Image 1 (cartoon, rainbow, N blue to C red):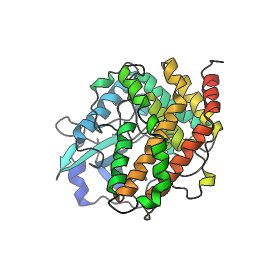
Image 2: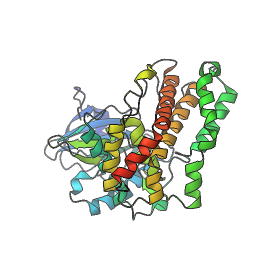
Image 3: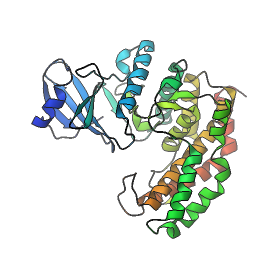
Length: 366
């Protein structure tokens, strides 16, 4: 991780910091990281180390206390199992015993900073991505006995692909910005997959796929690596920890990390699925997450296909709605994002048999 050069401790930060027991006086406050949702700062104290301060955005949910409570419950549970508790994200309590404080309607929280770590925006080697698979797989393995139903569903229908499809169809019909004509091919692609969007949720409702405590935002840049050993040591951004499917966690990591191009690449010829990276992540994930059922293993490629389709539909719906959710740099940015996701879906479909074979090999089924 690297911090912005700016180094200030403005007076308006002092009341926030005073709510948390940092052990010694804060001496600097730096804007930190590249997140687009929460406002994040790196706090340095006189003698007790460094901390991460965040102003929690209400963009994702209006129930921020439940969101933070999910994080505390899960991290407390994980810390009891961890060989090194310092490698588990640690929330500090504020005055009153809650893991946050509210000032002028804004919610603030503090984490202990995980020293000597780095964050990658993309895997530099297949081993990097294997490490990502391993730590996300270990996260779910360690939570196998955690009662997922006790977590708050702070973002209802977060990975309900059928609902995302229905929302897209409403956006197409409303066409509030007059953009549907420019997205005809993408709308047609989504409509051609209507029969696929509800399959995984139907399997979950029937009990064929177990509901688990899942991360739900398994991007590579939510993993901290040891700066010396390059070992994945800590997961961050637990705001979306909720009941879910392991397939979605697996699939979203593949969608983000095994693509050969950026999420907003305009040249679709550059968008491919790197099967070597797929294999590396699958190896790390399945070796660590030993409790996966046979059906979950069989459907890992389907998890990648469906979650990529879902994210593409979300980008497309936001484009049609006038870019009200995802931040954009230019008018067709969300349409470009939808196109890259749909190209990646086609890649997964073309290579589906190969991906199934990789899963079998890495799971020792051949």
